[in-house]
Image (tube, rainbow over all chains, first blue to last red; front, side, top):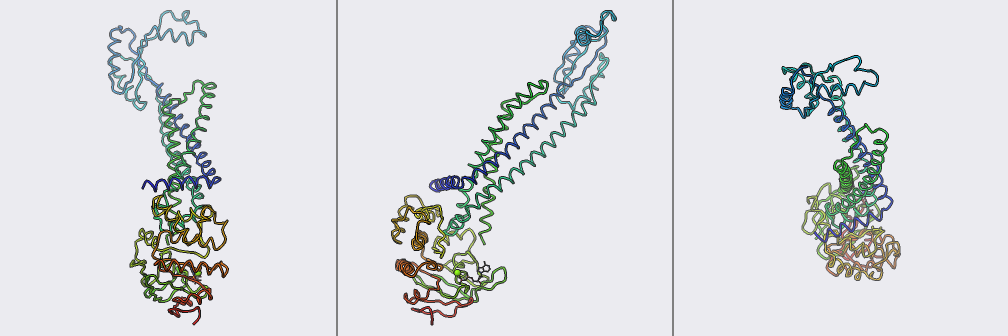
Amino acid sequence: MFSNLEFFIVEAFRSFRRGAIMTLVAIGTISVSLVIFGMFLLLIINMGNIVSTISSKMDITAYVEKDISLESAGALQLELSKIPGVEKVDFVSRTEAWRQFKEDFGSRLTLDELVLSNPLPHSFAVAVRNPDLLPSIAKHISKIELVDEVRYSGKLIDQVKSLVDAVRVGGAALIILISFATLLIVVNTVRLTVLAREDDIYIMKLVGATNTFVKWPFIIEGVMIGVIGGFVSFMVAKFAYDAIIMRVSHALPFVPVVSDPRLLGFVYLSMVAGGMAVGMLGAYISVSKVLKAEGE
Amino acid sequence: MISLTNVSKTFPNGIDVLFNINLHIGKEEFVFIVGPSGAGKTTLMKLLYREESPSAGKVVVDRVNVAELDKNQVPYLRRNIGVVFQDYKLLPRRTVYENVAFALRVTGAVRSTVRRKVMQSLELVGLLRRANSFPDELSGGEKQRACIARAIVNNPPILIADEPTGNLDPTTSRDILQLLDKINKRKTTVLMATHNKSIVDDMKRRVVALEAGRIVRDQMLGGYDV
Ligand SMILES: Nc1ncnc2c1ncn2[C@@H]1O[C@H](COP(=O)(O)OP(=O)(O)O)[C@@H](O)[C@H]1O
Ligand SMILES: [Mg+2]
């Protein structure tokens, strides 16, 4: 087997070099397809990220009755944070809320002249783990005795939720579609490199090579073409994405962009692995077809 | 060694090519298959190494029932049959050495064995000097020698040659026939299709004449014509 392996690799390299133009075309096709695939994946990931950033910023504001003591406020905070699905509870004192309010609107109104005492109650900002839980948690909170009023932006949440679903479903469907398109293109390109060697295959079969034996050099060549194509596409995608991140964070600083190196690494790795897989699969499908056509 | 019993062949397009062929060839025989173009010589030979399957009848090669052979056993059948073609079928971008070695490597032979056997084979056909030449640098006779070297490198008990001299001049043809004779004397059964009258007449071997898919003559020490 070891000496066969050497033969397979030598044959693969030989055909790789010999069909130089065909090999380059195949590598180029795989690269372009994978760049499209990778950039699309990054787009989907970023849309998901934007949506989840928006929904994570949505919280429930619970206004408490006006004249409760700080101790009972503390007890209430503890109670709120124990509700299942609640991530974090921040106490906003009425003084703080008033200061914030004045800061937000103070330049337009001279509030202190109009309103002598602080009209605002203490409140809690309740962040939830999952935006789906907002309505039920809001309802739960509104039943607590000391709570006066609960607010959250229900309509916006529904819209964001349907956007999340659309991105998830549509993105997954498109990724599958693009994967198939990539595979199809690669299979057809690699098929050209196999067809260029039909005579070799005929002679191999005639002198008694088994089908498995005939297939190996092609599969190795397909893997080489796929890995190189995947690597080229990774470089192109990384270069392009880094440039886009820089522009966006400069021009639209409030838009969250994914820059987690582990997530990006996963995307880039999946491009190289994807290249390898389609190269291998493309070669396997093509050579099997040729063998089938020749076996009676 | 080779035995065809009541063999007929109809191609899928409905063309009948062979009719009720009965032919038995013993070990180490040298047999000419003669007949005009289209008589069915090539088809008959293809039945032996299962490039075609018979529509009816039984084909036995070296005790193996070829028609009923499992598909994944066909490669092992073919390792016992060397095939030589009129158009050589050498791989153009490989040297003579590589072409011959290729036939051994695909059977899984190790490098050292390959080297020894390829050299022996090239020496037998008288092509050692041209080992590193590419096919298009060779004359027709040399190409045919390379093709023969590839066919016998695996030491098959049977050699099939389909009009091996079809593209060669008379002198070169005679050389090739001497080579096939030499291979036959090394205990290889040789089956050769041809319509080269002078060669057949010279050699005085068994002659099987095909006409329109039927055996019309089977004669020991025969000539091209009756
Ligand atoms: N694959 C095929 N399909 C249909 N007809 C074929 C095929 N191969 C050969 N034939 C026909 O079979 C007949 C015999 O061909 P062949 O065996 O090549 O004859 P020969 O070798 O004696 O010249 C011819 O009429 C040819 O057209
Ligand atoms: Mg013929």
